[in-house]
Image 1: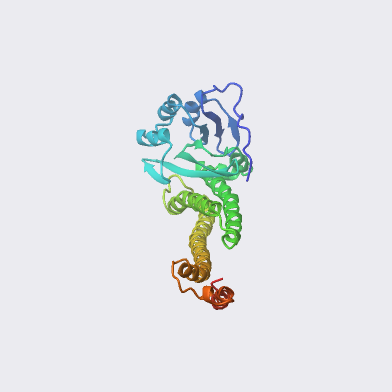
Image 2 (image 1 turned 45 degrees about the vertical axis):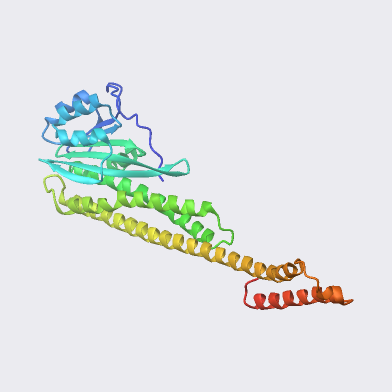
Amino acid sequence: MAMPHPEHAMNDSAPHDSGLMNCVYYDAEGNSRHISLHEVPERLKMDTGFVWLGLHEPDEALLDRIQEMFGLHELAIEDAHKAHQRPKIEAFGSSLFIALHTAQRVDHGIGFGETHIFVGPRYLITVRHGASLSYAEARTRCEQSPEMLALGPSYALYAVLDFIVDNYQPIVRAFQHDTEQLESAVFDENFSRDTVERLYRLKRDLMTMRLAVAPMQDILSQLVRLHPNLVQDEVRLYFRDVADHTVRINEATDAMREMLSAALSVHLSLVTIHQGEIVKQLAGWAALAAIPTLITGWYGMNFANMPELQTRFGYTAVIVGTATLCFIAYRILKRADWL
């Protein structure tokens, strides 16, 4: 997984607003220039170029300022405030609001976050919440193709979506590795509660991953087919490539979920079978113990005419007979695989 780049690309004159990570202007040739936030209105008045704004968990004051500066719809800003949105794409006039779920490895586990994107003819605004890597790397990749950036913010949007989907892939590979380990643990003779807990946690993470990935197919499908005022035809092929990656990740996630469901069922079945074998063995030994218990129970009664009292070897004969019956019962139970 790519490591986040340091986000200190703004020039020294930029105001240090809480949550403002980057503010970059791209001209008609796709050349970049880092600007301060108060320069944005002036740049938006120009006929060409666009502004790419990067925010990370901005406070309410900054979002309100951004809303006024770019003319964003209040419902979209409200969604960006809450940061608990389902993945979706919504059109507000000539602009789009896109909510996405992100994922990354955090402390030997999976952390999920959100990214909200505002796209207009002259701007791209990304708002990150929670476990979400910096888009500095995606910006660097874009700047290596200034001719594509010259087409407008749609190519920058592609770079962000491609970066998000690319970061799903190492997590899916980690899921596949964990799934293979759990499959081996399922058939281990030493059944443990830890195996069931790991199966459940992995299945829960896969479900969360599916909820993040599956809706992206619809989002990318719209970007491939619709919104001609925002998405240039030259960029639609790139969105289609990201959509193909998303489909493969979603299929792999679904396949692993089914495998884990089957593994959980197999594990529980094997535990039940193992318990049944234990019960059979206990029942077999109980049957063996019943023979001497029955005989000694008879001889524990107060009768005068007891066989071993009248004959010299009567008591020995009872012991030998009891042992013989136990041996016969043992052979029968052993042959029936109860012992």
